[in-house]
Length: 313
Image (tube, rainbow, N blue to C red; front, top):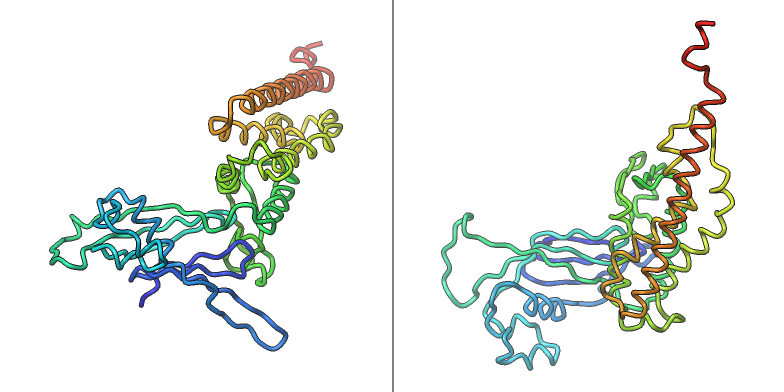
């Protein structure tokens, strides 16, 4: 058995192993005062085989429903199909919620002659966590607070100062000490939004909906930072673009609109109207902020800078 790919779990204490012979194992790292060991938490081969055979673009014998009782009873899907599944690489999302893996399907009963030119591989994305997982959701909210604390959202900049941060709590990085990681906000939030999509049936139940908790966190942060947004840095040495975009309160509005824009088409009509209203109100506040900054900057320039003809008189 050769390892085709390894992905870290949400908290950095779990390993998801994909092998080239189509096996999938979930291992957990257990630490005590005297030792550290890795134990098998779950063999998830049967479940991932069912997912792949159900969604693969390649027609698979046995996947059409002729006889899938064995797979439904927990037997490996490889036993009810004539195709061999092989994994050749995996990458996890920013927060460890989804795995993207490369796989191939080849015949186990027929002789196949294929050169590299005709070998076909596929990419699939699967959820690595269950919905309504409180630990996962708490971790995502914690990461959101860290993100909101940055004034510049163009890239998420993280400097690793100590080797023990090689596994950072929610799998945001695994690299050597002293490294600098730059990620876009869309990359950091992508799997959080996909996680929200998975609970679409519960969006009407505010008390258990992570989507509403995510949205409320953004709104509460804006309300807490609203006053700061009204007193921007008016130093003439401050770049105009920085005054426009590097504002924590305004960033929370931008992220609210980002969230609504990506999820509203999966919503019920009534909730979609609410999200459109929210996004429209946020956009007005952002425009007011831009206009205010522009007027203040022009005023500062005219009052503090010498006029173009001042040296002639």
